Image (tube, rainbow, N blue to C red; front, top):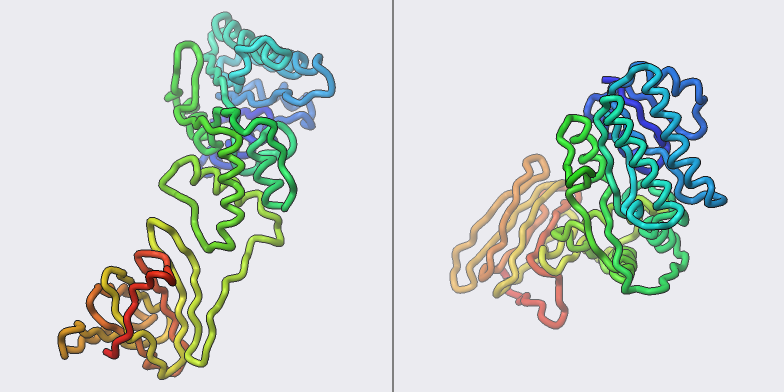
Length: 369
């Protein structure tokens, strides 16, 4: 299928083209403001679907709104008509098309052009009035407050909020791309004459900024945001895409002694804590038990034995573990336990606990196995 994408180097265009390729759509005609106009003549001869994403939203003067959002659309439609091409046309408009301002009027004019062209020429018209968008590859300090906040906070730059209570309606780029590909396959989500992305989020500027600052702080706290909340999950992915190239990594505090080391990796309030334990050859760690706290041990390198004893029993239970055969060992409450390195190299164990360590309530009691 031959697909024409105008605005191919823009935020939506880059994300859309990447996913089209992932799904096996390889005949993609890419057109942007720097493409030779003569190519558009060729593309409109045999394209079978048009994603018209090109537009103007930050011009030098107001006249450019109409020229970019109406004028270029007119050129595109004229070429399709010239070549008697009746391919479906998907155009990205804006919720601002309802407003009486230069940008809104230009987007409304573009919508009307496509609707009228569809009626007169027989092309299927698919018009999306999009809200504010966010996601990877969006240009910061341009026309997306989310991109600006993510970029500035990730790069230790200040942000400006005039009114933290202003609520934005936001759609995530992956949801937009999913919807557009649905439209390509004839399954667009219609609401009256217009189409819309099924998922959107209403969030205040203050909450957006607070979340992004918490993402930055999460490195220091070794925490993970609440991934059960869809918006937080998507905003966190967006924030990470704006990290400076020299700041992808961050150090962890290793607690080192002659036995090896213990390092906290991830701490969450609702999903517990993950740590990395390294034991030297011949070393035994543990010899304690818990009332309620429970753990999971996974040896990923080396070999050893995990021993258990119910605190009111003399019976010792042993589980031999090795990085050659990955298996998880549950550490039940009420059993004192230890782990011994039986090999001649360091033994590395991933340890999960059902709660972050609390020095005020450690729920950990020394008792030899």
